[in-house]
Length: 83
Image 1 (cartoon, rainbow, N blue to C red):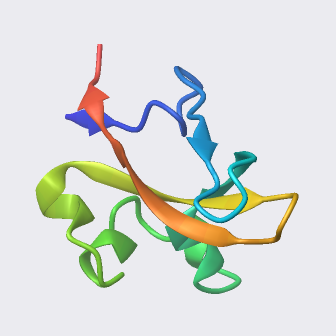
Image 2: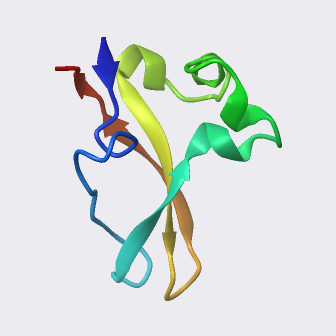
């Protein structure tokens, strides 16, 4: 079983904004933005229908936001084996 290091508080990812090169902040897991009940759905259900190859690649999709220019981007975070 693999887990997301960001969702589980093991790591903090640092991405540079491709537009203005300022530090981007993690705005959360992509599937929590699909609807009001999406954070409460079974873990991994949305990964099958989100349009990304994250499940096959072993990634957790996160939204990163730039507070300086407002750009938002989706980045795949590589999952790691659970202890």
